[in-house]
Length: 63
Ligand SMILES: [Zn+2]
Image (cartoon, rainbow, N blue to C red):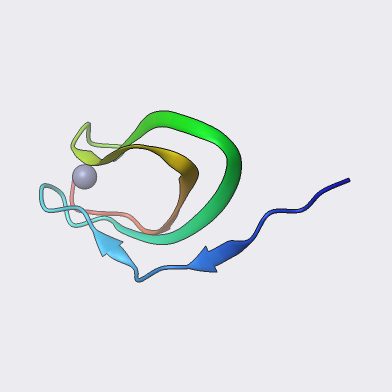
């Protein structure tokens, strides 16, 4: 089974609610078209490339 490289990226904070996410990037063999929205609905990132971004919530923002 092939494995694909993963990278740690810098943490990102939602500009709308202040929630903090750790971000990892994973290479994929095919183009991925997707996006990630914060739990408050703010668009954090959209992409269309041979990789995907994985967001993990570290800290909740103000609600
Ligand atoms: Zn947010």
